[in-house]
Length: 624
Ligand code: UDP
Image (cartoon, rainbow, N blue to C red; front, side):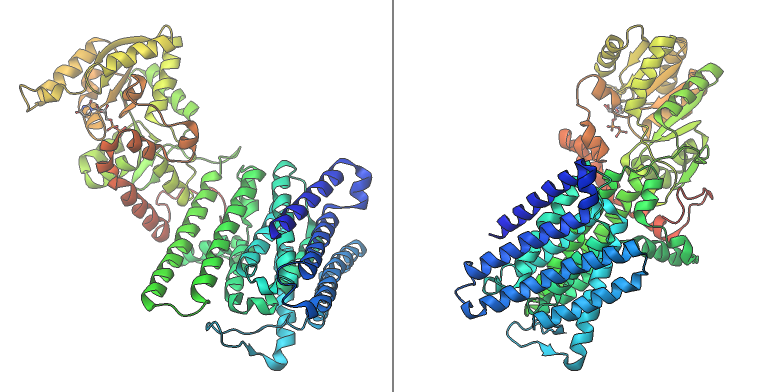
């Protein structure tokens, strides 16, 4: 039945919104907010009538049928009344406190309409009665309902998500209470099912029609409904969870303000309050994030906080459990909270893009390595510049592994310092850099550079040499690339295991020198070395002058891909930053090396919390 109410409200609101979307007359007569409020109220009240007269709880409480219906009708009339009066207040230009008075008056009306709409002190023991608050009960309940309504109204600042948030909150309250079948015939379950349906349908609509806006008055009125539902007797044991939810989900702007403050404190800096009052969605929009992505991010954050509030309520406020179980629950909740906060903060930062006119330096020091914040096109232009100069240049693509290696290996660190160009390769580097708010946005990977360089080389006649990978791989890759880019001159290939001659396990510097001379003899413009980190960089650094190649670039396992030995991760996996996991999936022998992933995450988090970027690079975007 509740699912039907949910669907009916969703259908009615979608229908109403479609009508308002099309016709100007209908728009003037029936703004989205009114359509939302009326749709929810009609379905919510119809559901209440059905449940009261024929539903499961009806038989148990036949003598309560008419009081329950009357109370329900009064509460819905109050909600619609808030919407109408608040809209009139807005039209007349009266100040916001007039709306506060309207809500407080309606809250008082709700308490009179249903005697159970009163806060009381809850007990975690299932059967022990709630303690009444005496004289304080009425003002505290009015204050509570007003607070929830006002917090919901604040959601209208982010139009595309306000419906979704209302739906999530209603869904949460429904999940916490809807199973109590004996009380099905009271106001909250049908109201919450209707509001959840209407809200979530509106959110889906707003992804298609970004201008859709429920407005302040409708969110205020629906906030009143949520406030009343959460103050009803049913929710005594879940009030703390609802409060947590209100703080987390509705206080979303608090999240970034708090993070900025905490980070500044840890760094011994002070941040002006005005600096931190940048709303998350405004910051994201100004950094080129599409409204639809912002909306999805907000709803994902809402889902996360709802799940958190649900667990807190179920685990801690529903009777005693064994202390060890409680401790386990507490650990899960802390993990979920911290993991979610860092995760969503990272996602928000990762979604940001370079904006026109952004002042981006030539290179940026990230985790001790000087990385060039170039796009793929810019990196390829630089490579062409190096070829035109003709002097030897070492180009490096740096992933998290390379950064960690440079921290442990001074020789490797020195090579990195001398490199002509270091591009950000792995997702880990981008994540870490974005966490520090450094203007590094785009992965420029070795494997993509190979394609880009070969494409330009085919047009401009650059001479390419491929060194590395197992026997036969380099030549197969060369053939495949030449087929893909007709005119490409691959002037030589060699496998990468000359150092491991089976008859002569020990290799000498002379072997490397011989290899370098062979390459030098080919008059190469671009040398790809595919031997993995750090061997490829060490070989290039030691032999660069001898080889005289204008560009020598370490590209790891790229030729295994071009030779068809392994597939590249699908685009969506790359976009999700999970290419490293995909590579482990197709080549399980890589598991052993994956220790660098958590190690780099710890390094990045420690740097984020403890140190400002050393190079003095301006953070990419104000406070957020
Ligand atoms: N390789 C090589 N000589 C060696 C060791 C490795 O040519 O002595 C090759 C190996 O066959 C593989 C590449 O170097 O094709 C290393 O790829 P990996 O995936 O380890 O590098 P990453 O992309 O992770 O830097």
